[in-house]
Length: 304
Image 1 (cartoon, helix red, strand yellow):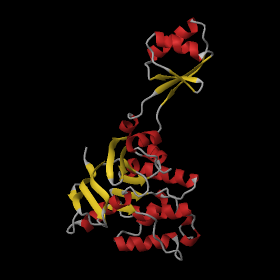
Image 2: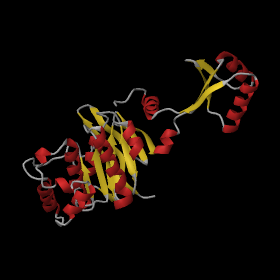
Image 3: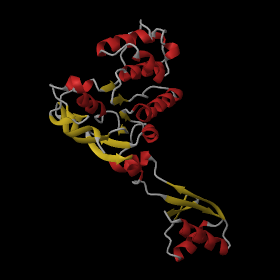
C-alpha cells in the first residue's frame, strides 16, 4: 500500500527541548489516520512541518511520494488541504464571500464553492455573516476552505475542539465520509481517544515528541488483554472449584476475574459450576479501554 504522507526522523527543537524527536510517520493512502496524543505532545508542530509551515531541524517529509522542499512545496500544497489550529475567517463577510476569497487565492473555479458548501452542509447558511455562525458552523466553514481545490490529502488539527456533542458528531460524520466519497486521505489529530476510536483506520500515538505506537487501530486494541468477569451465588466456592480445575481466578469487588478463555472453556466451567449447585448470575467479557491502553503505553493518563 502506498503512503500519502511519510516522515523520516523528523525533529524540531525549541530552545533546549525537542517538540518532535526522530518521528517516522506513515499515513496510508485513502485512510483516516488518527494522530493521537496529549496537548503539547508535538502534534501541531508535526503537521506544520508536513505542510512546510515550520522547517525541521533534521529529517524530511514526503507527501504523495514527493519530497517536500523549497522547490516543490507550492506544487504539493495545491494537492493538500489543511485546518491547523482554529479556522481564519472574515466575520463581517458571509460564508460564501469568505469561500470566494479562498477560491481566488487558490485559483479554484467559483463553481466549486457550492460543492464544498454542500459537503459541509452549509448551503442554507452561506448568505449569513460568519460573525453570526456558531462555533460548529465556523469549524465546518474552515473545513470547506480546506476542501476547495479537490485536495488529495487533508490535515485536520483538533477539528472537534470546543464543539458541543452534536457538533462533534456532525464533524466526525463529515470526516468519515471523505475517503470513501471523495478519495481523500485524512490526517486528523486529537487528544480525545474516543474520537480517534470512532474515526480512524490507522493511528499514531505521540508523547513528548516521540512516536510510541503506530499501526492499524485493530493492532492498538490487541494491546488490550481481555478478561472475563463472573458473578455467582457463592463466589468463594466457585473460585475453589475453578482453581481445582487449573483455571486462575481472583475474587475481587464481589465478582471473579478470570483470564480470557475460549467459548468451549467458558461453556465447560459454567456447566461445572451449575452441576456443583452454584448459580451463575452474570458473566461478561471486558477489554481495556483505549484510555487504559494509552496509560499502559505512556505510563500516564491522557487529557480527555
